[in-house]
Image (tube, rainbow, N blue to C red):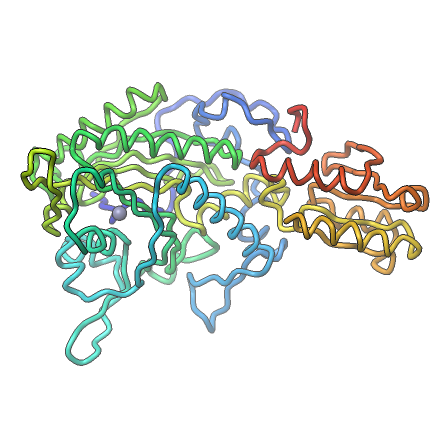
Length: 459
Ligand SMILES: [Zn+2]
């Protein structure tokens, strides 16, 4: 039976979808419009791009990330374009969390061995942890998950019922001791940066908090254009039990079942996929080969609050045990970006694109106007670049910037009127537009965090 430490991406190979008949694949537009269909499960290969979209090859081709044997297997580095996409994603998620009442913290990636003994990771999850560092006197461990640190932050002072739910979020590093033969790309890594959070709440608040977390996942998937392959309720399964008392494990299962039922989403249960401390809702996505993996999770945990002796003072003046809801909206930065690379083949939604606006002067004579437009766009917060006449013919520059969502072309007539002709990545031509209007409209589309290239839905 497999056991997961928490909501982090499952580092093992994805499972093929089981026991489902797949529908005939509809054509997949390059830029799919956001619609209610987004929540319909995909059942495997339906939306899977062709195999050439494997994120490892594409990531290299697009200059997003790399690896070097001198750094080590499963320890990718991020190049500027990859780092830009990751940064946009992280900023989006942090803003989403802030609006949903989360508070962000930082905690160290190392902790004493005793911390993980307390949490139960040492007993249940040691095989996936790096060996401790002996510092002469104490042993330090690279953390396999963030939960223990957040539990300690919770108990750093006395808590009252009015503070609950207390939503503690962190996009933090954690480490998995995977065998080197299994490592590769951004999905099989030893260093993971997880969009994690722990909601400490009263037992009667747990289902609402888990439901709200599921709502945030669905909202983020709309912005990202990600379709889940399935919603899965991951259970310990027959003959297995959670580290918590069996009755508490069953209580957590009942609460998560209630959350899924209330959501109206199609879901299925899977035995043997739970975390050691409790059941979880896993949001599964499929990779370019149709293999499934877990991107996002929501879990209800009665075990760690007990292990860490967490308490709050209730309205009745007595001390109560809070529940921990573990949740990750986009999973790890690594797995999320790998999935987005495969999903879009490098043609990212405008808000995620490494370069959002390419400014193309037709000849040297419009270089000054091009630089001014790029400067105006940059000042407005957009990622803009000039591709001048020295970089080749206009046709060659258009081809080279084919993945950039917006291209502003400036010829003599546009330059004279302080305008630019806008070409969208999908071939549509807009304008000419005044420079100020162009920047304002592109800026509004980027700020909307959608997948549409232009107003009017299409794409
Ligand atoms: Zn956790």
